[in-house]
Amino acid sequence: MSKAESSSSNQVKVDISLSPRVNSVKPSKTVAITDHATALAQAGVPVIRLAAGEPDFDTPAIIAEAGINAIREGYTRYSPNAGTLELLTAICHKLKEENGISYTPDQIVVSNGAKQSILQAVLAVCSPGDEVIIPAPYWVSYPEMARLADATPVILPTLISDNFLLDPELLESNITEKSRLLILCSPSNPTGSVYPKKLLEKIAEIVAKNPRLLVLSDEIYEHIIYAPATHTSFASLPGMWERTLTVNGFSKAFAMTGWRLGYIAGPKNFIAACNKIQSQSTSGASSIAQKAGVAALGLGYAGGEVVSSMVKAFRERRDFLVKSFGELEGVKISEPQGAFYLFIDFSSYYGLEVEGFGKIENSESLCRYLLDEGQVALVPGDAFGDDSCIRISYAASLTTLQASFERIKKALISLRPAVSV
Image 1 (tube, helix red, strand yellow):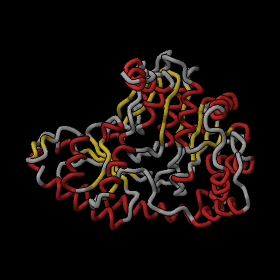
Image 2 (cartoon, one colour):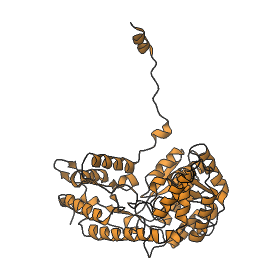
Image 3 (spheres, helix red, strand yellow):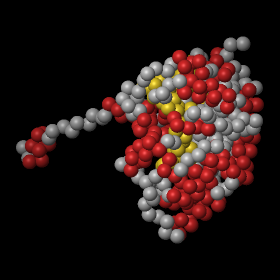
C-alpha cells in the first residue's frame, strides 16, 4: 500500500455537524425565489421578477454624488463603530423633526442595513426561553432572528378583513411572564398595512402593563405611505420612549438598497448593548455609504420632492394592481396604505389538479405554477406566516406590472373551476 493510500485509509472523518441554533433557522424564501428567478432570466427565460422588496429607481443623483465624492476625497477608512458623528447628528435631527422623538448621538447605532439593526436588538435584549411576539403576516426574518437569539417566536395571526392589523385583545391574551419583545412593522412588509394612531395607543396601553415587554418598531417604510394614511412612531406615544427600539434606514425610501445603511435608536443601555455586538461582528458601516446617508437626510422633510415623486409612482402602480386584481374572480384584497406590496388572498384557487404540473395545494405550489406557466416570480404567503396569500412587489415599472398582470390572469383562467361561485 502506498503512503498516500495508507494516509487516506487512516484519515479521521471531519465532523460536519452544525450548531443547533443555525439548524433551527429557515433560509429566506424571498432570497431563494429572487435568486431562482434571476438564474432563469440569465438563462434566457423572460421572467418578470416581482419577488424582491427593492425599489426599481436608481439612487437619487445628489445622494450618489455624495458617495462618489467621499471616495474621491479619500473618505474610505474605517468609521467609528456606532457611526460618524455627522450622520448620527443628522439622524437625531430627522427623528426629532419628522417623528417627534428626541435622541442624542449616543442613543443611536448605524449599521450595515436595518436588518442588522434588528438582529442586534433581538440578540441584545432576549435571553434563552424569552418570547418574541410577532403579528402575522410578518417579514420573513423576524421569527428566525428570534430563534438565533434562542428565543421563541409567538405568532399572532391577523385577518385580511381587519387589514392585517393586530387585535389588541389577542395581544393581551398572549402576553406571559416570558414575553420580552413585541415586533411591529408599519407600514408593513408584506401587507402594506399602516397602523392608525388610535390602534397603536391601545397597544401601548397593554404594553405599559407589562414591565418586561419591550417594543421593536420597524419603520423602514415610513415615507412610502399613501394619504390619508399617516405614520406614527411608537416611541412618540406616552410612556413608550423608555421601552421602544426604533429601527429605520435608507434602503426603501431613498432607493439605496445596495448601500447597506440602517440604524436603531433607543434608550442608552439597550443601544450600548447593540453597539457592543456590532463591535465584535462587522464594526462600523461603510464610510462612503454614511456620507451618502447624510446627503439623503439633507433632502428635506420626508425626503422632499425626490422621495415624493417615487411615492407618487408607487401609488399609481398600487392603484392599477388593486383595480385589476379586484376584477378577478375569487380574489380577496386589502388595499395597502404604504410600502410597495400587495398581499392577495388566492386561496380560492387551491385544490385543482393541473395537467402536466400537479395539484395546486398552497401558496408555494401556486407560486411555482405562476412561475412555470406565467413566468412571473412572486413570493408564497407561507413565508410570511399566511399560506392563503401571495406577495406581489410593485417596485417595478407600470408597463412591467401591466404585462405581469396579463400573464397571471392568463395562468389563472385555467384554475377557475376551483373557484366557488
